[in-house]
Image (cartoon, rainbow, N blue to C red; front, side, top):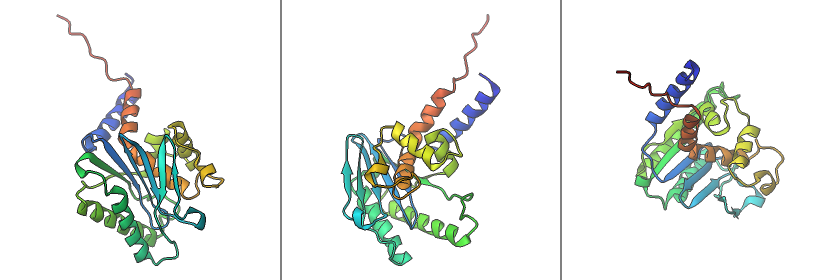
Amino acid sequence: MKRSQQSERAKLIKYQERLPPKRPYQVGLDISLNSPGLTIKGPNGVQCFFWRQRVREAGFRYEDDFCSIECIPYDLKDPKHVRVRKVASGIRYALGNLDPTSTNLFMEDLAYGAANAGCSSSLTQLAGIAEVVKYVVDDMGFDPPYQVSPPTLKRMFSGHGLSKKDDMYRAWLENGGPDLLTIFKVKRADQKPVEDIVDSYGLARFPEDLQLAMNEIAPPKLKRIKF
C-alpha cells in the first residue's frame, strides 16, 4: 500500500472509531430556519421530510420504490421563534415512531466557510437552532447527534469535499433517488427543497458511505513470517 493510501485509510479509521454503534435506523438532520430537511434510512426504506412550504407543497406527499417524501407545515413568514417551535415539533413528528436504542442521528455541522459565515447573526442563529434540536432529541431519548462537517459530508456522499450541489444531486440519482427537479418543478439542484432532501439523505448514508470509502482503499497486506 502506498504511503498516501495508508494516510487516507488512517483518516477514515479515525472517522469510523468516532461513529456510534451500528444500528438499523440512520437519521440525517439538515437543520436551518429557512429550509430544514430530515431523512430516515432503515430496513423498510427511506423517508424524507422537508419543512419549506409553498402553496403547491401544502399537504405534499410522494412515494415510490426508493423513498417517501412528506411536507411538514411551515411558513417562512412566521417569526423566528415560531419557526423554531415548528422545526422542533416536526422533528418529534418524524421521529415519533422510532426506537431510540435502534437509531443513530447525524446532523450537519456549521458551515464556517459558507458565503454567509462572516455574518455572526447567521452563525448564532444556526448554533441556536442546533441546540434546540439537540434538546428535542435528548428529550425523546435519543443519543446526541453525530455532527458531520459539510466538506466531510460532500466527500463521503459525492466523492469530493468541494462538491457542488449538482454533484450531490448526481450522487442522489446514482443511489436510486427519484428526479426531484421534475417532482418539485424546479430547474436547479440548489433550489429548495431539493438540496435539503439530498443533504439530509447524504447524512443518513454517512456511516455506509464511510465504509464504502474504506473498502476502496486496500487494507495493508500481512507479511508472511519467515522462520
